[in-house]
Length: 226
Image (cartoon, rainbow, N blue to C red; front, side, top):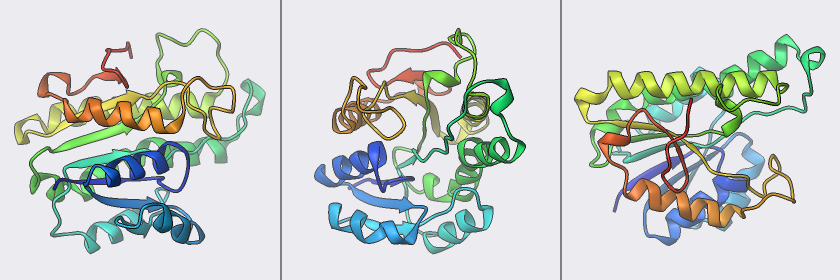
C-alpha cells in the first residue's frame, strides 16, 4: 500500500486526514509538534507510525528524514499551520510574523528537500500543501491577518516553484484550500466537518494528475486564483 506523511496530525483536519488514510489501508506517518499529543494520536490511529516533529526547526525535520531515509513516501502532506490571533496593521509583531513564515512557508520547502529521496522511491510522488483562500492575493478584499496571509502566499510561491523544479522527476506539487472547516482555526460555525474535508482531499489526491501540478485547488478540484 502507498504511504502518506501528514504533519500536524494531532487535531482538526490533520487528525481527520490520518484517520481517513488509516481507514483506507494506507501506511500513515503521522506527526505532531508536542510529544504529549503522541499517545492520543496513536490511540486514534493505531496502525500509524507517530513521530514528534517541530516544523519551526530545520534540525527536527532533518532528524525525522534521517529516521525514514529508506522509506518510500507517496504523498508528503503539509497540513500543520501556525496562526495567531491578529487583527489589523497595528497587531503585527516581528516574532509572530517570523514564526508564521517558518512553520507555514519555509517548512514546506524544507520538507520537500529533506524528503525528496523518499518521494522519488514512491509511485505517486506528490507534495501537498493544505492552504487557505486567505493566502490568495487576488481574493483578499478584507485586509488584516498580515502574518497568516503573507506566510500562506509565500507557501504558494514555494509550491509553484517546486512544481516547476521537480517536474522532470515526475513530482506533482499542489496547494489545496480545504474549505471552511469546523476546527480550532475555522471555529464551530464553519460549514464543513474535518472528516468530510479529509474525505474530499483524499478523493482529490487519488485523482491528481501532472496537469494540476503547480495549481491552487479547492478540495473538490476547482482551480483558484493565486
